[in-house]
Image (cartoon, rainbow, N blue to C red):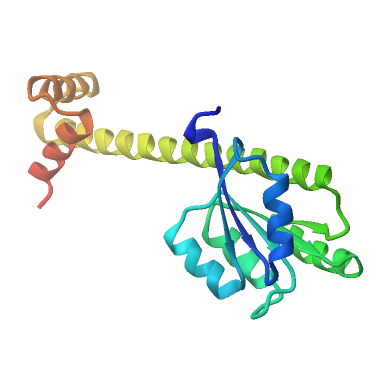
Amino acid sequence: MPNENDLQSVLIVSKTDKPIEFIKEVLPKNDFYPILSAANAGEAKRALINSDVDIVIINTPLGDDFGMRLAIDIVTERKAGVLLLVKTELYEEVSYKMEQYGVLTLTKALNRTTLYQTVKLLSATSNKIRRLEENAQRLEKRLHEMKTVNKAKGYLIEFEGLTEEEAHKFIEKDAMDNCIRKIDAAKKIIDKYEF
């Protein structure tokens, strides 16, 4: 059985129970758990407040919304991947509108294999996007730390007459002597010289 972190949580939104049961049968519990359900857009939004799901499958139309607005809201506000199921005659129009938001669209005339493969593709894509976002956040944090340390070095150069190398060593030594991170040592220096 896979690690709990490898499991993808799913929210199925459908005004009828039959599609929910079909999708639950197709998605194996060793890959997708928990599988939640909602009967309309309002209920789905409430469920998303309480749960951080990885994949949302919307069986259109819903009772209180067709489903497109809900799909757009989810992909713009959350990290979940969204699959929209529509009638065959609406596929071209809905797919065209949804692709710019990154929402996958399928016709309801689909078999188990197509549904499973599409959800697995959505899962893989969501995981890739999540990793890229995590890397971007790490890089942003590192850049912030570098800017803070450089600002502190600038103050040491300007007010203490140190060279850049001496300022760098001063910050490293202060961090080591006080068992703190370099950014914290840099913040102390900045606080000292900023009025």
